[in-house]
Image 1 (cartoon, rainbow, N blue to C red):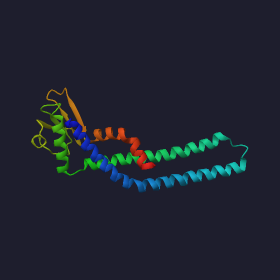
Image 2: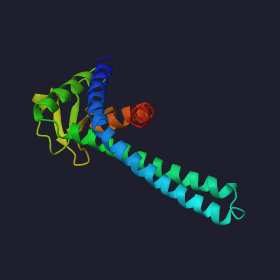
Image 3: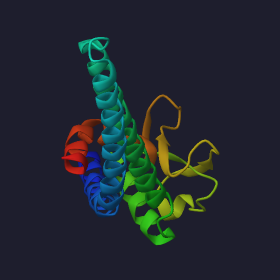
Image 4: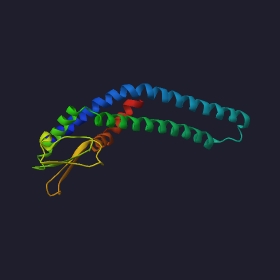
Length: 185
């Protein structure tokens, strides 16, 4: 249950940061959509000119092809915006002040103790927390960890992955439709 509380807290934190990103992304979204609209409009004008010049040579397939291409352009830009938003949230989490990270890590360790009695914490070499600060049995570093931590049992048979990227990806995958609706509707 404590793990759920930590997940909820991290989710709430990610949601707040996503809200901040929403505000920043809205202006970028409008600019990208305007650019896509201009591109679509330009493509449509070209197609209209072709229709006037050789209406008998064009068929429904060419028109639907142009519409599909314009949708691909818009979709590509939307995917780009979403990828940037994800990276921004992750970068904000990773660059949080030491005291904020320490509190989050302590809560992660505490919640994992319901599964692992005396967890070993594996953290990024960029984090300099001690086992005592975290409330863990020991601390090791692993350069593959960007931020967050992995908690392991003494024998290594149980592992709880609480890396920021893993948690954010889980939330992201679960909420991508809602986020996309907020950003693009």
